Image 1 (tube, helix red, strand yellow):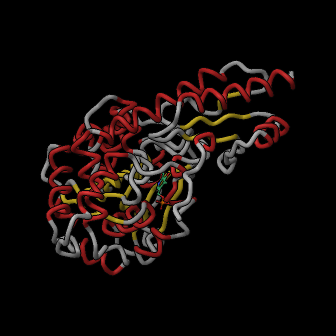
Image 2 (spheres, helix red, strand yellow; image 1 turned 120 degrees about the vertical axis):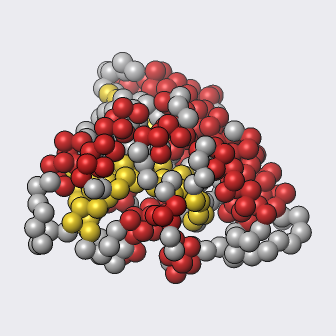
Length: 352
Ligand SMILES: *Cc1c(COP(=O)(O)O)cnc(C)c1O
C-alpha cells in the first residue's frame, strides 16, 4: 500500500535537500521512462540535455552528469591537477569541510590549501598570498582555485569579484573551478546570464547543482574549455559515476533547463529567504550572521530560543558558525515560512 505523503505542515527549512522533486524534472523523468533507450549516455535524452546546457551557456561546452556534488567537485578538480598540485579554497568550502577528502582521494593526493575568509569568499589578495608565497620544490604547487557560488553561508560573488579572481588566476597560471551546488540561486540573485557568471568571467569548469535545484539527484560538470575535458569520461567511469541508465540523470536536466524551472526554482528559494529574514529582522536576541543574498538565512540566537524552536517541531542545523541555518528550497511555502517567523517572534517576545 502506498504511504501517505508527509503532511503539508511537515515542511522544514533545515536543508534545501529536504525538498522533493519539482514537477518539471519529474515530468521529464516520466517521459524518459516510456520505453527503452541505449545505455551509458548513448541515448537521446543525454544528447538533448548536453545540448540544453550548450544553449543555456551560449557556448559549445562539454557536459558530464554525475550522481552528486562531491563526485562532481572531486572529479573536476582531479581533472585539473596532477597529484603534486594543490587547490586553493576557502576554509569553509564544501570541498574542504564536507567531502570526506574526496578531492584529495580522486586526485591521488592534490592538497587543498585553505584561506580564512569572510562569508566564504576568496579574494585576489588571498589567492596571490598563497600562490606566490612559495614556489620551491617542497610545497605542493598551486594549480587551481575553487570558488563556491553562492558560498556555504549564502554570499554571492559579484561578476566584478569573479572577474578579478580569474584575472589573478590567469596571471598566476591557475585554473578556476566553480562549485555551483546552488548555481541557480546565485544566477537569480545577480540577475545575470549563466554565461556571464561563468566562462565570460573566466571560470574554466563549473559543477552545476541539480539536486538542490529540484531534481532527484545529479550534478553536471561543465567544461568551458574542451581540452580540459579530455578523458574525463574515463575518470567518471573509474569513479563509479557513469550511470548505465544515464537518461534518468539527463532527462531531469532537460525538464529543468528547457522550461526555465532551474531559474524560477532558484529565485523562489531566494525570495523565501528574504521574506523570512525581513520577518525576523530586529527581533530581540536574534541577529543575522550573514547578509542574505541567496536562499540561506543564518541566525544567531540564545540557546533557549533554539530549544524553543525545536520544541515547536522546527529542524535546523548549527554546524556552520554555531548559528541556526535555514535553507529555502524551490518548494518553500510562504505560509510555512511565515509560521517559522511567527514562532521565532513569539519566542523572542517571551525571552525579552
Ligand atoms: C550540497 C553541496 C554540495 C554537494 O553535496 P553532495 O551531498 O555531495 O551532493 C557541494 N557543494 C556545496 C557548497 C554544497 O552545498
